[in-house]
Amino acid sequence: MAPQIKPRTKRCVATLSLVLSLFIFCKAHAQTRGMNADGDVLSGSNRSSGGAVRQDGWLIAFNGGYESPMGDLKDSYKGSPTFGFSVMRRMDHLLYSGTIDYRSYKPLADKIQISYDGTDYYGATFSNYKGIGAYLGIAYELSAGDINFYGGVNGGFVLVSYKITVDDTNFSSIESLSNGQSTYIAPKVGFNFMLSNNIGIAVEGRYSLGVVGGNYNTRSGGSTTPGFNSVAGNLFLTYSF
Figure 1 (cartoon, rainbow, N blue to C red):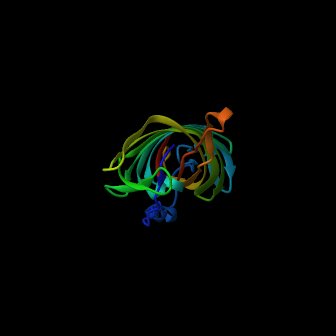
Figure 2: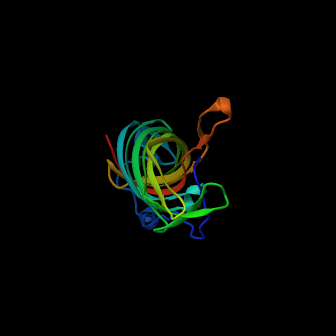
Figure 3: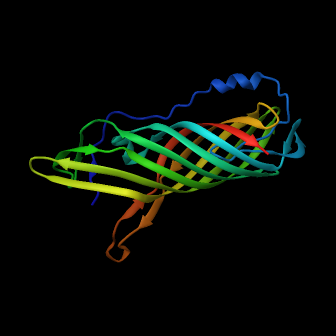
């Protein structure tokens, strides 16, 4: 049975710099194309909407941001930078994407109190909580002048790895997981705008729901594995072709 983590007072909240807002007031010098962040960027479709020209096509994107764990995980780990790469396809107002990203949460402290029975607590050492995510996404975009707003969802999984070591005078144990699969379902919203004919920038926020992933030992009532639960903000640099 996985240990119950003693709640910590320290909470991690994802923060995202909005300095890009300064660009909003810059006049566009090229076709406005959309991008769905988190990898769902928008190209354009030669269809006029709200004064902006959108074009269908392919896009690639690199993203960097900050992600904070939610649920039980936030009691043991703090947030970390996240990096990713996406390939996208825009078809009219719809944006399809495939994304791979990475994060590595650090523990809140060198020693964290955990319990296996809810009564006795032991000092434990936590390794970094690493995750490699792979998702497919879809979003719907609406143009508002030079800016494109979108909303959608990503779905896939995160391969997580961690190690928890208990070395107490009365008890010792090692719990580890290597590339365990955790379900990832995350609604997302954001906006984007073009800096040139091919280069664009997008700002996106997303929240992975932490829905139940797998169910094991079902005949004996077994355990369920909760999905990946986090909140994140990302900045995307996109190239359309």
